Amino acid sequence: MVPADLRYTTDHEWVRLEGDTATVGITQYAADQLGDIVFVELPDVGRSLDQFAAFGVVESVKAVSDLFAPLSGEVTATNPGLTASPEAVNTDPYGDGWMLRIRIADTAQLGELLDAAAYDDLVAAG
Amino acid sequence: MTDPEVSVLRTPLESRHEALSARLIEFSGWRMPVQYSGILDEHRAVRERCGLFDLSHMGELFVDGPEAGAALAAALVTDPPALAVGRAHYSMICAPDGGIVDDLIVYRLAEEQFLVVANAGNAAVVSDALAERLDGFAAVLDDRSLATGLVAIQGPRALVALMPLTDVDLGALRYYAIAEGQVAGIPALVARTGYTGEDGFEVFVDTDRTGELWDALLEATRAHEGVPVGLGARDTLRLEAGMPLYGNELDRTTTPFDAGLGRVVKLGKAGDFVGRAALEKVARDGATRRLVGLIVEGRGIARHGYPVHVGEHASGQVTSGTQSPTLGVPIAMAYVAPADGEPGTVVDVEIRDARVPARVAALPFYRRPG
Image (tube, rainbow over all chains, first blue to last red; front, side, top):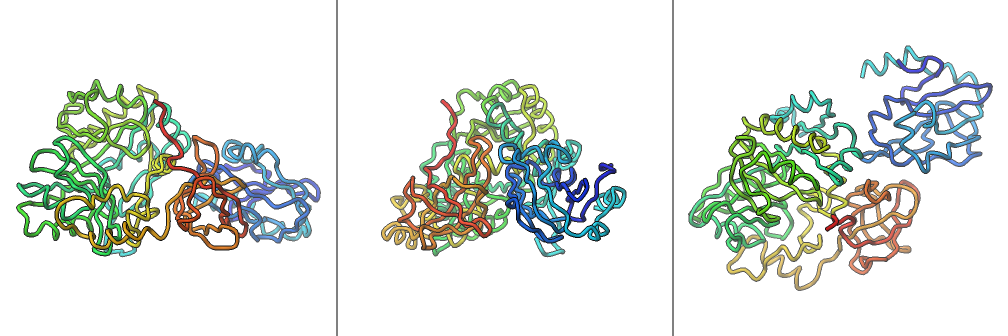
């Protein structure tokens, strides 16, 4: 089971909502599929993201994979710890492995995200 | 591989990999383990202790007969008759235009018997080419690729792990040598060769004994704090060791001289061989590009196919790249213009839309201590 208090995308990002701020990362399933993560490329603070558009890149030893914004909004913070310790995405994807915070532009977009049960079903279906 | 009529080949160790929770992928027409515990963990185990590899997908081509050596000398760029019995060398089979059909290891098993080991993805092509090129010689090709299992144990503890299991005198077995004996009671050929940059051994047995061999070697590997290793770490290990991979650094449009492997081509040997005229011309005129190592100095990992620039001009392309687990920096191999190939030269790698600085480095990136 994935954390019940988060929302998810079909691209395997998670979202934690606190007021008008969304914290974003990738799920344990995504991190496991990628394998050992060695590099995370994130946008600059202040950049505006569009929902479901690519905002960055995560690289494992073998593969490179795009990251997609779960919601539109302005980037207010990125995780400085991932520069030195990208492996936190593997070891603690919902905690120390967080990637960025967004100031949510349009709360109506939340309706396009999955809840934990729906995301679990998605992963189970392969 | 896109042909649905062609079924995927299965290693004799498939059920064991599944029991070890390996992630299996299709590679060169075979279903093979890409990782078990994780690429970094497996990579470090081989550098520091030991690791066990299933290489049963490789092609094993036996060439027998009074003219086996002469036939191989005409078919390959090296001079197999110059090998002493029990020794091996790195070789290539080229097309008439000098392009590399495959890179190979050639072992001399007896006065009149050689073993040619080909890459899985090229095994059928090499087998067909050898059969054709042996025509007219008193030599017979026996393609035992599917009848042969291959397991490698590599790393600083490989010697002590394997020693109690075999009657082969491993201490006396030199690098690039091979001996016949038993491993875990199974008739085997034991070679001191590998693709990791570490000391280690490759053990050839009959397919139907490969499971038993693996079980015995895995127990010995674990007893020396080693782990099973998949194709993922095999790739990062060989890249750190500066070893080319067919399909990345080597292909039909590449000559051995382009790849910096001109020393492999024995132009001084007697007689003609396939590709001689074309390779003599490249040797005389010089290669038009150069295979180099790169250490990426900016942020990002240079991957296969990414363009390389020097100043405003396009210089070449990355052939392989990864984050080096041993060095902790992104490393790559790339073809660049000959003038841009000197170690220390600063180049830019185009990583997605950004130009990221990198420096040409001497290969290999990693050399084992001692």
